[in-house]
Length: 460
Ligand SMILES: [Cu+2]
Image 1 (cartoon, protein in one colour):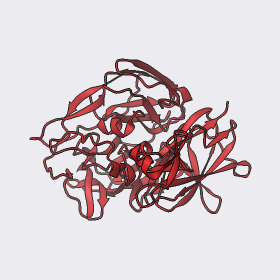
Image 2 (cartoon, rainbow, N blue to C red):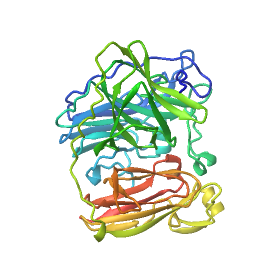
Image 3 (cartoon, rainbow, N blue to C red):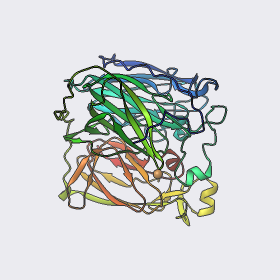
Image 4 (cartoon, rainbow, N blue to C red):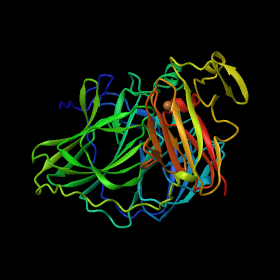
């Protein structure tokens, strides 16, 4: 397995170190978030700093660490030149706090403030990001990790959130401002030319042989699907999208992390003292270093399977009583829309393209006037999704987690974002336990901007 030094896809080569993360600590439940332009050294030394839009001066923004059952109150002040909002991804949140402009709140205008205040019912790995003009604002830096600790801490030695992102920058190391490039909108989305972990080109961590690490991987990229692997680390998948697996799953192969997805790993450091261990990212030509773990002397490797994480509150899915709805995912390059509804008008493909719309759900580009389905509180909903496009999509439901319904009728693990490969048909089910209007959209942000969004209404 080959691992090269962390690289700058555009050809940069120099490196910078990342400070070790602190152990989790009891967080205060009140935070002030200043959203404003800031500069950060993204490119190697010798290149200029990159102009970003940051939460409290850094990209990613402050890692929020709270404890399950806490309330979080965040006072946001917008000092950016655009209206904005923050979405608390994966939190089963009060609908009014979901951060979707035009659906759950008015956008936070430049110079204005908005206070988010909500309960944190679930432990796990979540994140926050702008949900306004997100194809631009998330790329410019409005994103951060939201870590909700279990009431009883699991037996681990280090807890390391790794925010994995890519960014497209110019030769001057500035964010490429072609956010609405038709090729990105209509193909695989905006892919970056720098790969970042916790906002830096290089991610280095000091560990001891035999340590058990909790790695919290969060894909905050606009559109990149990361294929990840480990070297010198062995362990288990503990949770997807914040939700614990009933039985930890031994990691035997590569891990796929679609945009917005998270995975919690418990891994034992099996590399020897003096060696390095790696989180690797695979491309067609081999594995590349994403994070490096320098190994010092330690103890024997444990290898004993960890106890599962305590389950979060359950909202059982009742398949026999479920109501069904179909979602046909349409359009994109090489399967071009011939026509679709857009803002109440039936438009031809060329007219849609002129409006930056290339994708549709059930014949409608952009958020339709009527929800995909209106659910009674507590009802189980099944959505069968047909990916009739020639691209993968990362389908995200706000406000509630779902399970995939497998062809044998069994339910997969709870998730909030599902990767749909080209041509696939897959079905999800969830209990409509959280009242309000919830988006269901592709989390490839260029795709969402170009038409891939609908919504679900849950009645009180
Ligand atoms: Cu998509």
